[in-house]
Amino acid sequence: MSDTSGSLISLEQGLEARLAELQTQLDAVRQQLVESQRLATIGTISAVVAHEFNNLLTPIVSYCQFALQSAEQEHPDMDLIRKALARSCSSADRAGKICHSMLGLARGQTLHQTVAVQQIVDDTLLVLARAPAKDGIALRVQVQPELTVACDPVQIEQVLLNLLINARQAMLGRGGSLTIKASRNDETGEVKIQVIDTGPGIPERILPRIFEPFFTTKGTARKGEKRGTGLGLHVCKEIIEHHHGRIELQSEVGKGTTFTVLLPGPTPSRAG
Image 1: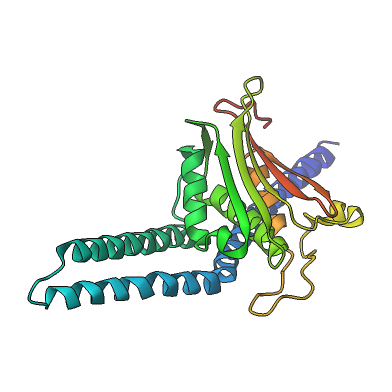
Image 2: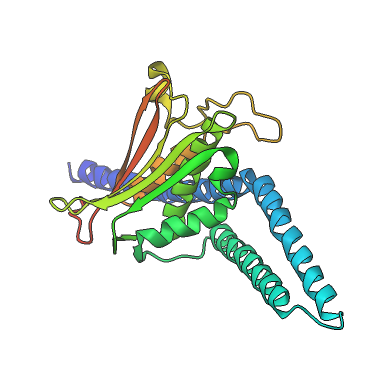
C-alpha cells in the first residue's frame, strides 16, 4: 500500500513539475507574441511616419534657406531670420520627439510604474505621427487632470496605438471624429480609457470574434496598407488582462465603435 502511495506522490510531483515547465514555456511564448506584435504595429505606421518626416523636413530646409539668403544680403531681415529659425527648430523638435517615442516603443525598455495617463496619450499620438485632421478626422482628447495609473506604460501605449490605428483605418476616406477619454471611477478606483470613433461600425455577428487570435476584418487592404494579421486586438486583450484589467467593445453599424480599457486602481484586490 505504501508503495502505491509513494508511486502516486512521485507521479503527482512529476506532473506538477511538468505543468510548471509548460507554464514557463507558455509565458515565454506569450511574451514573444507581445514583442512581435509591438514591432508589427510600428511597421504598420512606418509609411505614415516616413511621410510625416518628409513633411517636417521640407519646411525645415525651406526656412533655413530663407534665413541664409537673408543673412547674405547687405541688410539682413532679422525678423525673417528669427521666424525662420524658430519654425525650423519647432519642426526639428517634433521630429526628435517622434523618434524618441518610436525608439522607446521598439525597444520595449520599460518598468511597471505609476505614470500619468496624459503622458501615455501624448506619447502614443507622437508615435502615430500623422495628425488625424490631415485625414479629415477631428481628434478630441479628454483626460481627467492629474490622472495616473500603475502599469507598464510601453505596453499600455502599444494597446492605445493599436486602437487608434484601427479607428483611423476605419474612417479613412470618409472622415469623422476620434475621441480619447480617460477618467477614474471614484467608487472602484478603476481607470477607464476609451477610444471612440464614428467609423462604419462592426457587424453584430462578428463582434464575439473580434478578440480571437488570427481573426481579422481586414481581409483586403487599401493601397499602401498591410493586410491585418488578426493578432493586434488579441494581444491588446492579453496585455490588459496581464495588468488585471479588462477591455470591452461596443459597436453599431453606421454609428461607430468604442473600445473601453479598464485598469485597476493603485491598490487592486488581485486573486492569486
